[in-house]
Length: 143
Image (cartoon, rainbow, N blue to C red; front, side, top):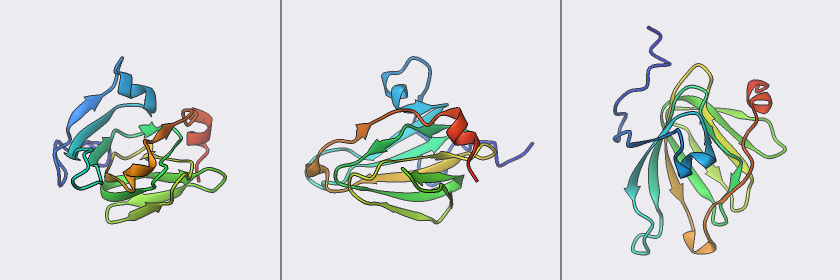
């Protein structure tokens, strides 16, 4: 079996809860995604953190973070794309710095799972604004 498509039960952190089917949170994702809260959204540390694991081909919708976001890629291979720019391949060990209010999406490559730590920065600026899905046409025409 091709191990790039097999999603591990645990990378560095637990995979978490499956988001798929009729879940309300699934309105923000295409495909199956697992989510584990590592640091909750509370004001003591002011930087909620999540372990997010995508099955091959899964991705989130276009969205913006008023305070910005950091992604620490912990396993697999995927894509990160800002609106109006070419998608970039992301792999284990990559750090993606997303400036405030930049419209973007991220997710797994078609042939690989992806796991990353998502850190919301400057959360006092407001919650993420979820936008339209990344279409299959946009996704399948990536470089």
